[in-house]
Image (tube, rainbow over all chains, first blue to last red; front, side, top):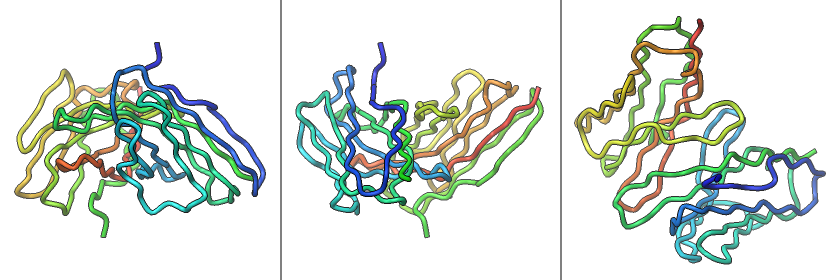
Length: 114
Length: 110
């Protein structure tokens, strides 16, 4: 069983389109995240949700809108895609209240905007 | 200046070599120190986790944290081709937001 699964694995689309990425975790964690990894492997947090509540909202364009229907799911919708949005997007989860931040990552969604 | 600076690499070593990967940081509030390993086209996976200063050993891997110098290291003994990956250091405060280094790509040649 995959602990953190995200779909799709690859997403190729035209500039200006709207797309969504879905994530699900079966670890029973209460916090989920979206990270963006650029071509130089730099991993930067975008959002985090704890029990469906938005906790971290980094400086991300309004075109990016996360949504968490329950604590096991976190989706990312992107409007009006731009060339600079091309990157790998990782979903992750962790269990808060343990005093640490061990992250469990999905396998990533490679987004290519043409 | 970035909060976390990681030796950029890439690093190429022969099989059996000892590898040293290093990060420095500026935020003295960091309490938790992690190393993640990322294989090509995969998500990062937690490799080592340390709280505060000290050493932690797990098989061929040793993580060291020196909070006085704001410096962390990961040592890999008897490196294997299967260790070829990108290694990311990460740190967090009690507030729970991990800050990552840029990653070091390691290649171990048979």
